[in-house]
Image (cartoon, rainbow, N blue to C red):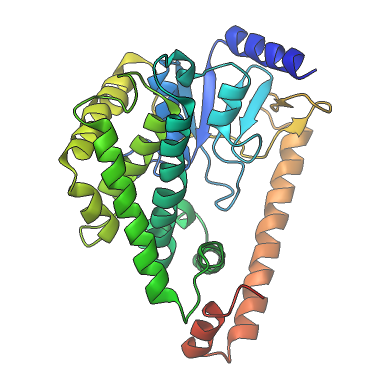
Length: 336
């Protein structure tokens, strides 16, 4: 059953005239400023896959973004380990299959450093250290101010919970996060040496993950960022990023491997066709509004109305709470 599904997905991929990556909007000189979307875009370009980029701004806190549409199928970020893992698992686009003299355990351990230690450090800087200006530009600039502020506050609490940060251990956790990030950069610098890729001078998903991370750190984080300063200590990593930035972001956009981002007409997740099958996209929009579009617009208005009510309720409840009490909430013990 699984092999049949993989074969069907691979056939759909091959038959699709054009693939579409739905990602978050461009910013900071990057084609998408989302730390999750950028590695997927880079993976497709490393694989020399022609695709279009559509921008999603409707659901800033949705975890199904980024996703890739091809034919009647959709690969979502929040299923099967993410878009890259889906493309590899279904034998659609697997850059790692070209490796011949590298142990899979070496690839997995290197990938783990990028997807845990470096990813955690970036999350920490974005949602805990930064004043909210960077995340506002990426996720919330198209929303009403109160809604964006509340979503940022909620995400900050979620990240602190995920990283195990409380008011009592915040200093120790910060030191631990940056120590792990520094060790990861050091190990990756030694692994890279003077090569243009991490393994066998051949691109892998680890290269895409590292490039996405490092491009964001160097282009989006401020000069005062500890993480950015730590990365810049490794000249070969910086050169690695600059080389591939030219090859994959500047040259590729003019060669047709990935078109400029354009607004997506809808970011609603596609419905599942049947159990065990991939997702099917909605029909293309017609010039005249269909009943489905009218329903979608009505739902969107309802969504905004409920968000506004939630904001008013939140502000009324929190009206008597001063900032010190909010700090105490952020310092609550998450282990209970």
